[in-house]
Length: 304
Length: 190
View 1 (cartoon, each protein chain N blue to C red):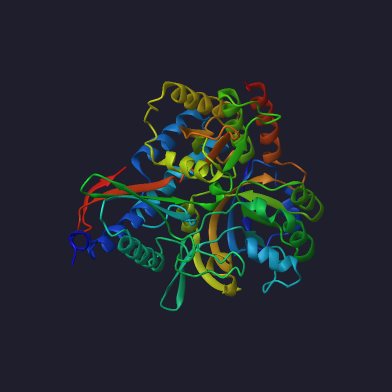
View 2: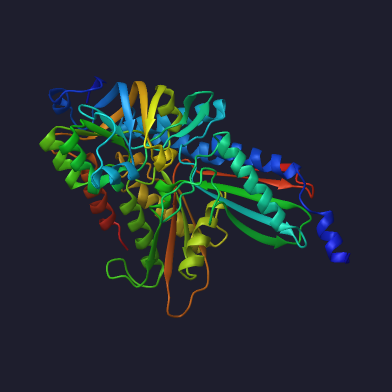
């Protein structure tokens, strides 16, 4: 056996990984992260007492508590199952994928996840959330000794509200920050309440159509209350939230002051010929959690 | 704006009295029906249940079988706009008095609400546990071949809360909010 093969074998994930991933899925589906809870419950003070917006935010608050206390899904649409995994070089990613997929099957049987994987032509539901494209794995290698896994469950209602703009655009403007700002706010206008607002936007300026959408979604892994290290983007993020909240769309599109909880923007380089603005709309039921794992798959730290 | 208690099946007079902004608390039978159900009805298959006076809930619940009994684990509304091509027909042909969903619906459905006497009821999207708490029993299921989220589940609910956002008088909260927000955002364009 070569030295490389021995290394791979030594740090292959073990059965502990199955339990860790199953627990990660349970937590993600049933317990909203603290930063999201703070933002969504804190927004209620901005709404007129007894208004439809106030009622909606109150129900959302009750729902967060009920799901947590009964260990049941926050939302019945447990969405696209997106794993973002960082592993040391030489780690057996194929084994990770097999074990995590098995954990997804078990989580579906237990009712943490809905049966959400449907053949696009026949309409047949596989019944266990597996099949081509499900679950989704994004693997990256890093030079740390441990494995980091983040999980996002993104419902179809908000996924359907994602939008991609190609600038220049006749109504929204040119290839500059003004055009970008107008495009993002057009997405908010078109989404209204259909993405289960108050929403959170992940945005990518640049990239190609595929990487742009992917990177936009990755922005949603940031903490809600962080500040973008790029001051130009930080300013754009707050301007978008401020304007969206003056639009009057409100929670669920009922009218009101809380339309967006946050906007997170990243950039990728683009081709000279292209200028895409890709927007991932996330619902208030913003399910993302994560864990640091040791080499045998035990959780050493929960994230978010 | 009033809180109105509704018991299914519902008569036309009661439905026509509702106004946009009213809250309703529904008790009785609800049938789930979403994309595949509407498409199947649209292509000529008769619904397996009598929908007269009933409410269709746009919902794909999480259901788990415990022994012989189906148990509802989560059941919030799904986006209704996908049923916009079909909903008016179901109102016309099968006499439903309302739909529950989220995000609102368009002109065809609004016109059908006025013509046939029906309303659009908005539940809180994502609030699957609050909704499930008012579902007391699962009484049956049809069209399971469509897959669990797309099947017609027969739910028994008590005081299921929703808000009237489209009424039988041609009023739509969604239309009003869209127009108002468009005007405001247009004025803030850079």
